[in-house]
Amino acid sequence: MRCPFCGNIDTQVKDSRPAEDHVSIRRRRFCPACGGRFTTYERVQLRDLVVVKKSGRREAFDRDKLERSIRIAMQKRPIESERLDQMISGIVRRLESMGETDIPSDTIGAIVMEALARIDTVAYVRFASVYKNFQAADDFEDFVSELRPPATVGREED
Image (cartoon, rainbow, N blue to C red; front, side, top):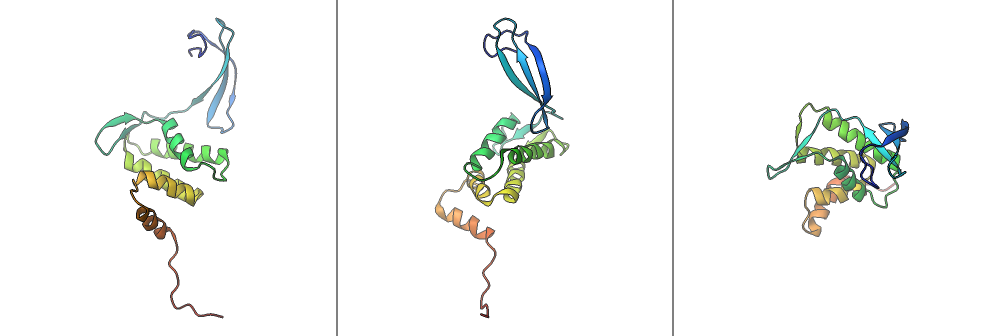
């Protein structure tokens, strides 16, 4: 592991333990060249995933990019960070267990929307506005109206 301070490639692991999410390993490292200390995280990766965009362009799956987009949708929402980390790990595990290395971006978006819908409706609508490329307020209205239960017509009063 390269030292982030001096670039030395010969760093030493001083301590390893499971991270708080219990899905990764937290390692404290030390650089003998500059004396710097830093932390790294190591995750199990079952296979290298490739995202196939709508344009046909292909790019390596980036867990950090997925996490950033979900965290943007979840900004200022009352959801614990651990729950969010669990959701993201669950999405990645689901993608890895699909058996395919090439995954259409639509599939990833649909899985994320499904997970967000179970956790927070506001984050779900925020993510959908980008994923479905809303262009006008009417797009929001149409989407939100699908979320609401239908109003009962001719309801009798007690």
